[in-house]
Image (cartoon, rainbow, N blue to C red; front, side, top):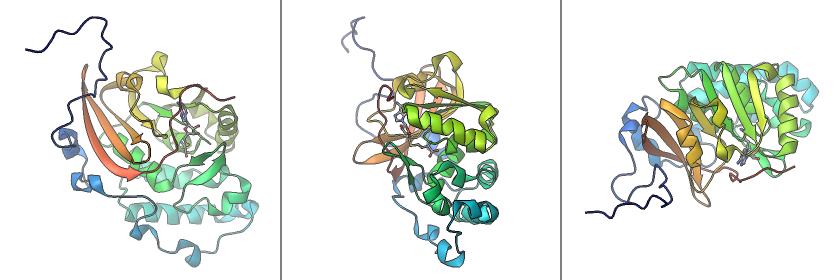
Length: 281
Ligand code: SAH
């Protein structure tokens, strides 16, 4: 018989379990086309082979950000086409990414590269996530669901929040670096979605208790472990997607299956900036 737990024992993380058995849980079977369980070991560091149609060779990119406005519809169409080829099938996500001007979320000097399938620097040692990663995470999180309220941890320059805001009525996005939070506010206003995103300056590792529960949570920075507060702020039946790990990271999909039960599935290998506690002013 196991020893009774002392009431003052630190409660275990809800996802803690003995290290044994398969890495996948039944939630995997619900992943559907394009997101097979067999895929869960696939490395996606950098663009996949199908992601390399030499897009810049085919389409000359305007050197100046000012000119990009004219070409950006076409460049986005190509980006969305490439995302489809890479297996993203969720039309809500694809049309949102078709609509959001990614070049407005990066520094002018990088605007001509905004539609490449690459993460780009946004200052403060952070990056705007690669389009495929954004699309994949949102599609997996929303699969089979119509989320009304979503929480994003790690707003960065605001791009992913803007994409979410195209099809989710209530988006809350938390950023811990003051300068990025300020930049995201400007970017979201410039992209015309400021009113639809509630941007919060703070430590997203604690979640956003007073707005919980969420129909979806997406974390854009990698912690050693997914913060426990986030698991509790997920509505039953909803999904959280987050990178986990340090040198070696994996995308983790969590589905809350009951008041005190969660299913966990490990997906692709990824590379994200670290999830850090506290704020930076
Ligand atoms: N969502 C962005 C990605 C930004 S990179 C996009 O659309 O491309 C990840 C961001 O997470 C960084 O800006 C970093 O400052 C932020 N971050 C890291 N730890 C955090 C925390 N505890 N709370 C909130 N944001 C955090």
